[in-house]
Image 1 (cartoon, rainbow, N blue to C red):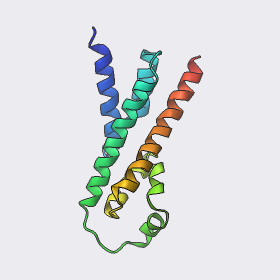
Image 2 (cartoon, rainbow, N blue to C red):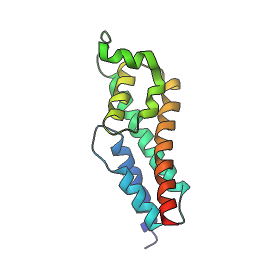
Image 3 (tube, rainbow, N blue to C red):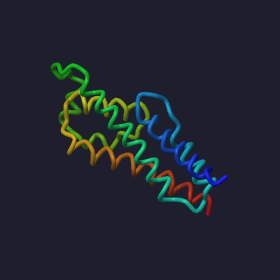
Length: 137
């Protein structure tokens, strides 16, 4: 059963990717299950979840660029005022997907979007993994 860790890693990555798109997912549960199954692992599942969730967020931003560019409505004024830093909240369920979609719709440059997107995703999984590790010790 040497393929089992690879299957768990692929499942974690897929779950994290889907969780960050407009599709439903359960990446927190998948990360917790991975960490419980392989209690010596920490950084690998953290990086897999962060990478998968970030790539899903990138897809959602890209989908936002496909929306027609029109005048920015009043509700998007807050996003325009605060800019790409709002993507640090991209991990928040439902709101995060909307922020990523809005970032693409507002045509924010990738060089500003990516650092905040990665940071938000990483910090969320780091907090989850660290708190779970603390509970297990």
